[in-house]
Image 1 (cartoon, rainbow, N blue to C red):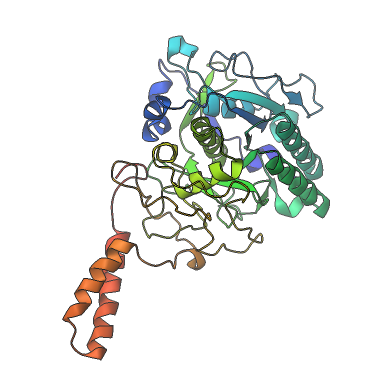
Image 2: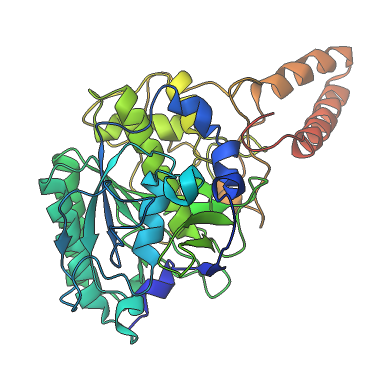
Length: 422
């Protein structure tokens, strides 16, 4: 038994009373959403949201939903959202800001259409939910969303892997593989239990699913965001203001749930700009353009391949690579991914330029040894090769080179700059 709704969220604060919710949505300003909206707002893309229910009539969400499906078996139908989690995730993706006289909550992709799919979670029932039943509904929801033509399937839910049976896992694998074959990109949270054992969670750890962790305003992984090879990308996941079912109509949330919604919206923005790309290509570009850690590692178990940067993906996407190859090498659950298992793009995007965005500060805690042993960045290697010319003796040459590498690595580790603009 597992409280499925609590495993990956919801994590919402008290209702918020404010004149302008938009002014408090720091993540939209940090991600340069107004700049992106000149090019793409997600128009023409359907994002399926698999969650606890949806307040379809909320001023910031009215008109955003397509006819969906209720798989929960609970009274009240798809419009009843007792936990409020589904409404929040829908808002983070596609809020229009029409509430509060145009000062309500905006989503990162306010022109997408949402396909709502309701499943049972802890918030709906007030009691724990059987893992097999929960994962079974997630599998059905993924299949339904893919068959309805959803480009992105966003799942800010999860269940501890240890509670799942082999049949549960196989059912999820089948559903995700089906979605990939239908051209859908599945995005899921990795969970908020890093401080409570860091258990692997499904569906975030299933192959062909983009697993998402959370970072704060400084680009540092949050304490609650889970670590592991299942983490592929990270996104803002703290102090996220959105529409909700509270009496005020707005809440402040945090967690990998919100981060997942932002990665899903990012995928929609890219897909609008490149409607002929496949799910594999959209995922590859998001991975290749993500902001990397300051140590230069290609990935680590805290932020995966980096913090999602849809603005860079729109302006400097690079080579999207093969249409029929998923960009991430499958890793066994519980095993660290090799530092060289990046997206197989023919020419992945270069490190971010000052005008394009930034690399991220080294996340805390310290990344696992397997993911932090990558070579220094090219600029450091160039500087080191010039310095070793002063050595005249072979032994001195080796010693001097070693000293230079240490010094340069320390310089790299202390480099400043935010995660989105340096």
